[in-house]
Image (cartoon, rainbow, N blue to C red; front, side):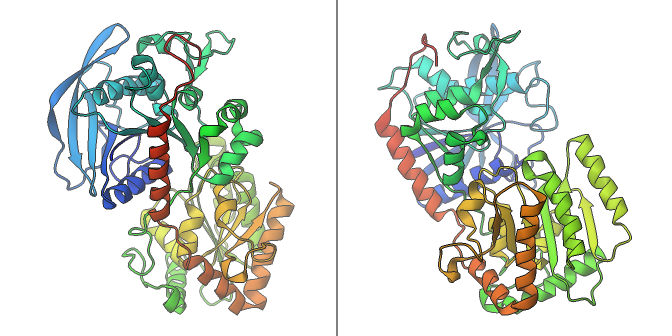
Length: 494
């Protein structure tokens, strides 16, 4: 099967978050099982090519209609881990992808609307036509809408559309649609001035199949406030909607072979984890001659991740006899200021270290050296933090939402057998609920260390690879090819 994955990110060359890891991991796994995989990205000037051979130019030039112009684009080819990348490089005074970063520009909506139109022009060429197109998040939500407007169902390329985070839906001014050649009325507009349309909603309606990145989050989007306004739309199309849990890159996140930690270990050599704990304390300047567990936080510091609870958990952990190690960044000034103040307040403590930035090697050492990790997310579509932590024998303490609920079995209250229990969960987003879960974890660590070690081992023995998710996506692609349905036409309202 020829699968074209369309995305704003693909690690390692264009990564801002978990979307980049998703595209890389799934593309590589699909290629390894024999599928022909092509990832289509913007040709950002900030691509991290390192020592890779520079992209080569495919012998074709696209003419992409946009805002009354015809903008020429080169298509560049780059080989990655068993699959191909196609980079859309417009030659335009707009400099759509010449900004030094992936996102955060005032004209992001225009940039990705243009990219979506360019993708449709590229895949519509007979020699480039895939068997299925896999679009991701709001940045590519216009692709299935454009395809539906340009072709009838029997000849249209089947589309799978994955929602990674419905907190970002792509609300844009309605007149953007006309710039890519669509009828301005093809998406329902809000009554504002100027009226706006929702690109993610358009993708949900126009795609043949839609999924999100965990079964629990799929349910939450339909039935709770986590749908953030999309509940009715998703419920209407529930027959083509579901959830597939993400995997992690087990070549990068493997404590047996990880080159970024001082002592490699696995379930059969778990005592060697203590060497990483010692190294972590030395690196962060934490007191070493103590019997305290290390409780880590590795997270973006934003409201989705539960910053209020993170701050409270740090204080409660210290008061309860734990050492605290945080690695995180905040883009919102008020949150950044709060954690800078907390860092200053705790500066003299021998039991706390807050690293306000991102350091890849420190992230690996935190997973390898910590005993527990706090993940008190307000919502969490899938979450990679808990999967990585468990692989490294670090026990998660997390809120029972999204993919956290799908992957963590509570040590005390799960109905699963003990050998499947691997962490601690709490329900309400309150300080009291978080403290309850933390206290249960700390009590087991102190009183029954052998049981706590078994929780570590249970987590380490889980399968968090891309093997099963890739098979699930192949089934989804097959369903999309069979469905070939579209709820409207180019002139109808989605």
